[in-house]
Length: 397
Image (cartoon, rainbow, N blue to C red):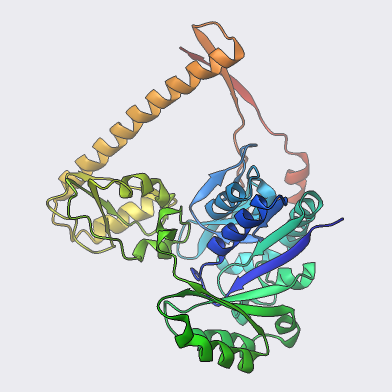
């Protein structure tokens, strides 16, 4: 029997869709059900690697872990990794498909819907329940025509929708009622109810608010979810999370400054440092001064290294001179290289022991990703005929 499906969409980004899906995945997994998370299209430079080497959004990897399943490229068939204000790398079913500027991508979305539906069908065939997650806002009617992330997918797959609003940022009544007012009647009919997330205080104070939203929309009020402060301990993928308030650390002995680059990638790699009570991790917004009393400056990864470097230079309003900033960058790179080298050596030793390879040499196979050079995506001829090149290299132990 095919899996039952429920989709969660939001009135905006960072309303808590990913965390709610992760929580439900965990709940039903612990009840003995096979649950699969699914997000048709994601946009994030925080990516996770699947067992077969593909890329998916970090949130879907977290949801897969909550569901007790290995992460799969089919959990996030389309991943956009921004490289500029208007351009992004397009990853389809785990592999680089090409690059596109925003206008081109909007026109090309219908070509990607078959990949989305193919991945969705594979998950449905393997699970008891699939929790799908939308992207951004369900009310972006200017993008509705070729949508594959929200109502476009819901209509194509004929799945019911729960709409989530965020009361913590304010205006939740208007955002939920406003969504009903602007979306197509056929889309609105798929919405079976709504949730209000991130509530602080006495829930009785918002009982009338829930009733007013239900009256204005005709949707069932499914619940008022309390604010969950420990959510900050989980990996985030939306850059909006970088502006969230952090608890003070009066006993911290080390101050680490991290400039927030415009195209920062995998910023949740910093979470282990932020979790250390002795470390005060200062995230420096663009244009702000680097703290002069920082013990260490870490330059995070970027999906647009040259552009972000140029932005840092042109906006160099730092309290640390550029030469020192460059020196800090070099030290960070050297330290990372030392850590990576040590980790690689350990992995190689463990791999040789497992495979019974004699000490002295070890071989690893790698498969480079193909890249588009003739447009935003490979041509159909290239896609069907281009062989995956493969090379084997031996690493001296």
